Image (cartoon, rainbow, N blue to C red; front, side, top):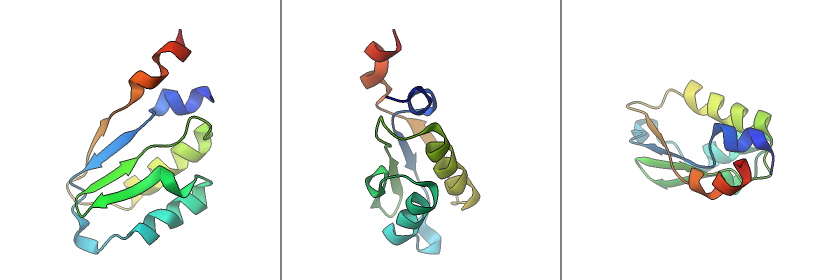
Length: 93
């Protein structure tokens, strides 16, 4: 596993994205492609939930690129929280 991915977060749930601008899975796939992530790393779960869960093998730069693109997209009422970090606890020791 690349340490950078775990340092950023193993998974991010971006809640209340306020899909007012009609964000689609295709928009997220474009971010994944631009940043070199697998498409499964960014999933639009519902109109107000974007799940970001990069694999353990994703590079720090790819994850940072995707986070930057998501922030620059200026989703209204964006709330960000981390989930899933516990899967990397044993690797960090």
